[in-house]
Length: 305
Image (cartoon, rainbow, N blue to C red; front, top):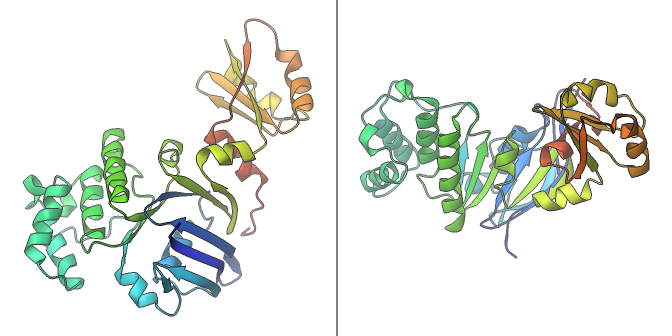
């Protein structure tokens, strides 16, 4: 196994806030790793340190075979970074933005690269359109085209599909898997559970600490959660009452149904026993990633308050 990222002891503070705390992470070359966690958990800070945009307070390791601290500039040149907010020039056209990015990277065959990028991301017909007039989905395509224009080995995506419609999200992920199949390593932060499930593996960070790592299936298995699903009239309205019962660590509505989870099966059975009556139907189900992450969030200590 070849590692594109192999970093340990990563730390970063801003004033009194210890934003990233002794984080260690490994990412296999050519894999897509989902980076998840609540807002303010340190995801963006971690991405920026890995690609050389932020200097860590401490930490050691290698990114793309290079010392990620000593060779930060070299790492930066081989990394594509798509920021959370659209950061290209809105008063330039799509083609002009890509040409500008190519000039910044001092790329050879500039016109050919821009043309190929336009074709690959389906932007050719809109190449003269001003970036500021694009919808969220088309801005996303342009931002991705700019991030991969210099053929990076590592691609970091910071919540790239926020506010984008489902069709555009699906097309975006098809492109990401195509890049991965070509050998590019991808690390993507997201709040969407369906996107997390499309990653080869996931890393969950809460308030600066990495607390879960592995494939989606492994993270679910390691959670230790036992989950029951209740369906029937008013099932979703029982969440607040059940959440206070001994043995229940999480009770959350899922549409008109209800998921109730705990780590002690006997205690959980006792908690839901009074509610096991018609018209409600109870079945044991595998916990979802959302169940697991709600549990992880509720069990993590917010050290930033």
